[in-house]
Length: 459
Image (cartoon, rainbow, N blue to C red; front, side, top):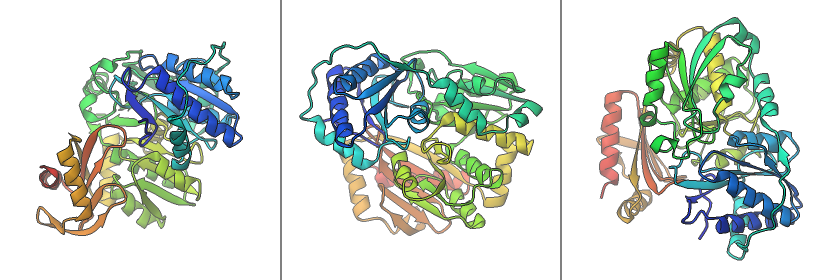
């Protein structure tokens, strides 16, 4: 059975992700579009194995079903498809990508008319139609292509102070992780004093032998290059460009929780975005709570997945939303995660502060308290899934000698302790994994809390 997860349908190429199944999904999608009176769709694709061929199949199905489809003229990032929907007159978008999943996966992401990830209701309509949908090939048609990149880059450049980048120099290493963000940071900062050195910026459908996920274990080359170049910062994006990771001037990894904090502070303090609410997912740092309390801004917590942030964006004025996975969105610009926009805002913050990234982070800790974060993943076998279900039904009152102040079950089980440190146990929505997350005010406490959490979930 084909089921969509946290963001799109993802499956192993040649197993469940086949041309026939992709056509079934596209036909079910087309039926939903017709039922809703929507007729203009943009189809994009990344650099994964055969993505352009899967995209062509989707395009042909849409055309055969009477949908006015356009195919991006070359591989692009997911934010570029969202941008095309919001700013270029489209009513839906499809992106062929499996984002940060291992190389043997591909996927089908849907963007609704507002430019963000499709709502659960929209996805449910597609899923209901898949079983009875045909997998037959559609007549081949000469694709009508769409140029997106130049308009997209013009928009993101307009969101930052280019004069600031022209006044002050900055050395940046950009790691595209063999994905379609390749070259975008350099082009966004052309005619400024920023020097961008690219690495892993060509197509490799095997992504160097590991998932194109910007987590610390995959960023050894970026760390080394930052040190070798004497760069101010290293920026990494995932395979489809909607997520970001950072390495500071010392070549040290900056975790995604701290990137959330840096962006939130930049938007509030320097962009003067104060009207509305801030949204975080259940796996995101307690520093967000402290900042919002200090600034008098309401903070909402939702399940993991940007689609859950988008549900609030559609109902209320949201200043900023983001999640632990490294995806952050500024709805006034685009109701979607955008790794390039996030990178540009962090660089702008560094120029405004005029200080190394590591010092800016220390200033955050001095003001709001220290926070250390860790995530451990386990294969989702039946034993560990049963243990997680049991924990959710009967949360413990204490873990590792710490009293539980609050148990949150909106997505797995989150245990919040008296000092705001926390543990979270949840099933991944994109991979067959059980994740254990922890955050604490010191590295020693973090390790103790993580070990206690692992013991609790172990069978």
